[in-house]
Image 1 (tube, rainbow, N blue to C red):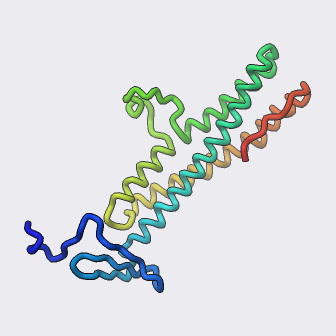
Image 2 (cartoon, rainbow, N blue to C red):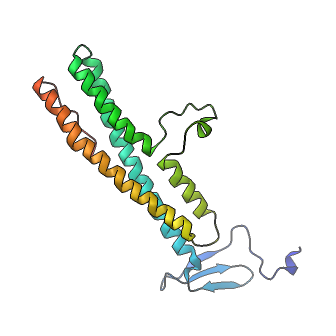
Image 3 (cartoon, rainbow, N blue to C red):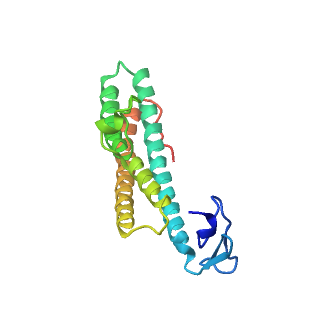
Length: 190
C-alpha cells in the first residue's frame, strides 16, 4: 500500500508528547496531530510496568540479602571446618536460605541452552515475561495480565515474609551458637 493511500502516515519514531497541564492528554504526530484524553492507555501500561519494575527490584534485593548471608556462611564453614556443630548449623541454614532463593530465581543454570526445558521458570523470569508481554502490546494490560501481576505480588509478599523470618529467627539462633563459641556474627545485608 502506498503512503498516499494511508489515512495516517506514522514514521517509525513519531513524535509523542504528554500535556504538561493534563497527564491524561497525549499528543502523537503523523501528517496531522492526534490527541487522546484517555492517556491512550499508555499511562495505564506504563504504570503497570513501573510496578513490575519495582517488584523485580524487590525480588533482586531479597536475592542479594540471601546471597550475602550465604557467602558469609560459606566463609565461616571454611574457617571452622573442624567444628561439626558449626558445619551442621551452616548446612542447615544454607539449605533453608537456598530453598527460598530457588523460589525467587533459578540457581541451577548451566548455560548450555537447555535450562529453560530442565527447570520451571522462577519468579524473576515470570515477572520478566509479564513485563515483556505488557510492554510490547499496543493497549493497556489485559485483565488476565493484571490478575497474574497481582498473584506475583502476593507471592513476593509471602517470600519476603519467609526471608525476614529466616533472617530474624534462624539466623538469630545461628548467631547465638557463634556467640557461644566466641565467633563473629553473620550480618544480613539490609
